[in-house]
Image (cartoon, rainbow, N blue to C red; front, side):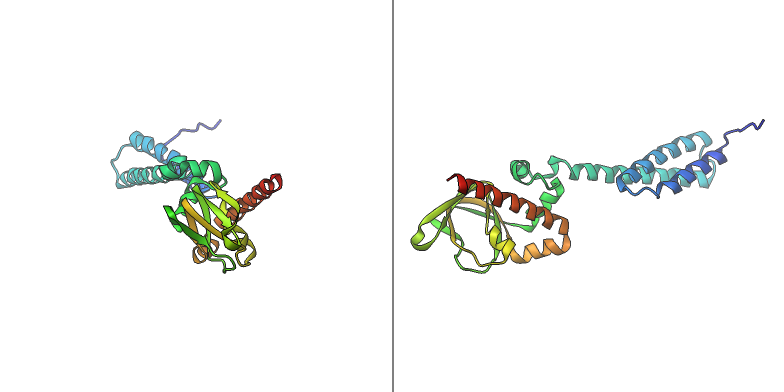
Length: 225
């Protein structure tokens, strides 16, 4: 019968083996939790054996560093996926219309966009008929009118609608004018959209999904009328 005695050397070897195997984990967030657990184990190990050697002092300092760093990164991970990550004034818009984005992805989309705020008796022309695609816009609040010849209104765009989305998808010229006296919108230029496509293709795909859904909603509204 073999009598196994748990010595500091054995504990150190076991913790080192677990740490080495942890890097096989494909999930970064799971890896960070494992490292935090190993850091806590190393705290107790150092408390058990003492700090009489430089090696044990080094183990303790590394454990403190790994614990603090990974707790910080775990906090960022969960914060970026929390609604608290989204600016307060944009949270309703996110929850109602951009919910397929993660909160930090929506925050990035806001950074890429330009804010349009207009409230005046004089109409602001957002889109010119038969022009090349320049901007894709989203109505955060207010409304806009879609007009054709002689400023005849054919439809209204309201909160939650997109502007120039058909031209964005097809590449065709715009089919009507869009004007507004009272609107709060966010707009992405053609150049900004290309940057999103190149740098963050996953956001670009989600944007296309949102637009496709909005086009379906508009079609349903049109058929009802």
